[in-house]
Amino acid sequence: MDFILLIKAIVSLLFVLGLLFLTLWAIKYIELHSASSRFFKKINGKKRLEIVEIKRIDARNALVLVRRDNQEHLLLIGPSSQIIETNIPAQEQNNEGQNHDKED
Image (tube, rainbow, N blue to C red; front, side):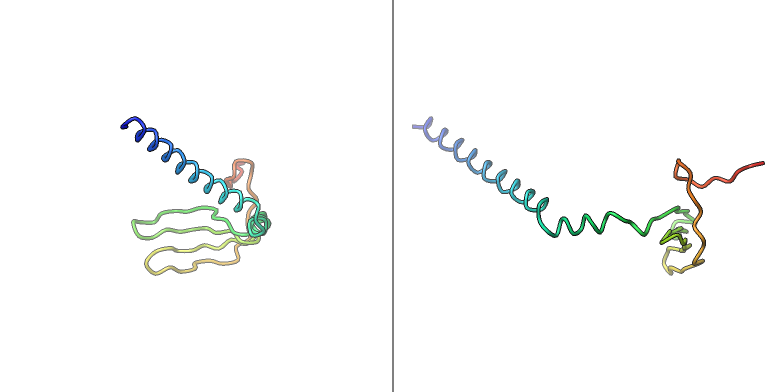
């Protein structure tokens, strides 16, 4: 009698786990093949905004250099955030992704 109850419990557990995995697979399939997913992939293809550098000043403040459409903006981030400098022409980056000055 106890053996039959144990088998029923194991079969029920496997059935519930199978339904759970089937539901998760269906959600993932719908997310990957939906129209909104294709729409967001096209938008994310071209990024206009990037953080070039972050420099900590103290525990509460930081300077952040942000690039947007070949223009750089220097921001002071902290309790009272401010824009320090705007419309700085962007410098080209070398292969390492960092700006370096040539020394003579």
